[in-house]
Length: 346
Image (cartoon, rainbow, N blue to C red; front, side):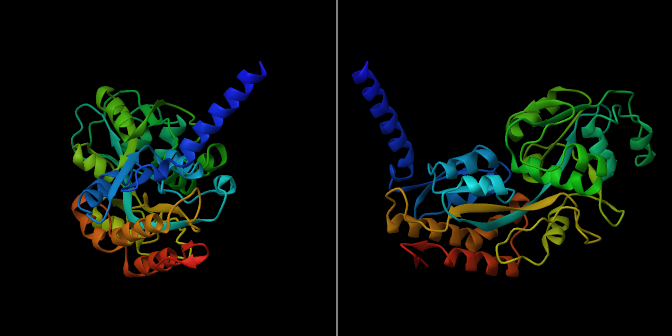
């Protein structure tokens, strides 16, 4: 029994070791994981990046944070900054480098409705709370007076996985609906009061496509690429805003703090779209860990430097908002703070 026990412990140690060093297993390939929100942009940027190969897995922000925590990737990507619990689970300080900003849109499957619907933030939260349960409710009729809304139950669809898109969406709902803030709050994964769960943007969009009366949220780039109808959302100024690149850019035109952690939902800009956010690449500040080489760390920083400069040219064609000049300066400063053996890499 002792021999078997020792053998089992050895196997566990070997597996743990192989996982811990998986980021070094392919010396010519940088490994990333996380946000589905930014995946279309990353796919385009990384496919044209020739300095090194990049393997990015679109598994959701929560998955990317977990992989970085376990040190099985070179970088994670999240549409929400690390919360206190997530940061505590990291073994060292983590840097947040803004990559771009984008919009989260509300898509729906309402038979007979082709024009975009107008939804207020309060009503949207009440729909996801299960309080507004029919498409011809008085609340929805009030903001869509000339639309023949059907007598059809609303089927709420939400993400079942840890998702930065969910964080952006619930961050917005928390700001515009006190009951939502009290009962549910904001997080990458919340206890949804109503509805069906789907994994990833593909999962929730698939449920909406096949379910009449359904509603969910996805990133603008995904909705555009898949020709999904989306709603106009009322902003803080009372205007119903179509989620365009211009409206997203206006929402993201804010003062960026030195650590880059800022929420841009429910923007004060009268022309800005209210459900928007930055997405951040996450890396360890000290890059000498788990046997990593300085060369690998340097390649990682070069990749992210490329993303915040040349890579920004790919944003607009894919319906993401390029970083502002001030955001780029903050991102540069953060990248320059990364170290190897305590010394700056860039």
